[in-house]
Amino acid sequence: MFRHQKELQFEVNVDRPDPQLARQIQEVLGGQFGEMTVMMQYLFQGFNCRGEEKYKDMLMDIGTEEIGHVEMLCALISQLLDGASPDDQAEAAKDPATAAILGGMNPQHLIVSGLGGLPTNSNGVPWNGSYIVASGNLLADMRSNLHAETQGRLQVARLYHMTKDEGVRKVFRKMLARDRYHQYQWMAAIDELEQKNGVIVPATFSAKDELEAEPHGLEFWDLSEGNESSQGKWATGSAPDGAGDFVYLSDPAPQGQKPVMEIPDKSLYHDLDAPGGVEKVVKKVADQIKRKIE
Image (cartoon, rainbow, N blue to C red; front, side, top):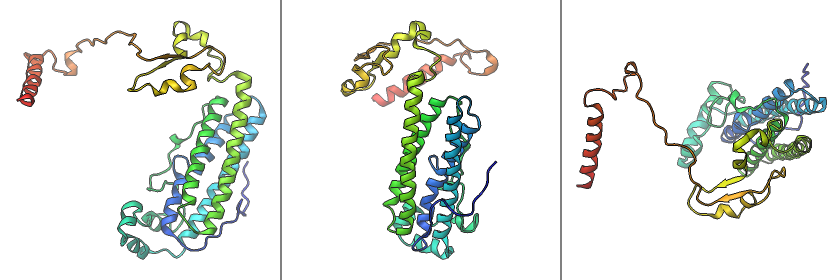
């Protein structure tokens, strides 16, 4: 059961309207790493959580907090849009940089939402359920949560420096503080789960189960120009779970065969067995090469 409380989690009072900033803030509302994503991600992980109750309770606590963050950002966007009109769109377009980079005011704030926040990113792309991760594996999910909070806090920090509005900055500072705590939280949960089950997901499919492929789980394959990658702990250190030492392969050789495809049935119309078909293709390519050389 959810119960809505009318007061916002933190105070939202902007200094002045700013339709362009409202458009930018849409990214941390309905973008890939916005508040809508973490809200849905934590809630679905919590809804589907099995096992120790404390993990479900934590996920539901934070997921519910994120519902409040979505509402808070909608209030922020609405205040930044107060008094906006089609004239603002025309005014923004007078500045070539603003018109080219920001595109001025988001017209959907006028046409679709009537000066309210939208479930979209800063370019008007609708929020997508495929953004969320809820796998049922706690360690995998907690790592995704840390990634989401990392990217989300990064974007809010960038937005913080894109405005001088102290009212907006005050909201951002509260969000940055909460996102910092959420990173601490996921780190703590990840550490606890790793100590329980090991660092590899899924823990129940062990390295031994990889059979003849097991040695490849310790090899670093250098497959790009340069060998600077050999200087990291990922190439010459030990595996975090003690499975062995990494091996750096400076010139790894392919270990599989060259694939040979059978000619498909005629009904698929590849035209490979048409009279002179292959010869025509070979001749055409040869003629193209010859023309380039000439």
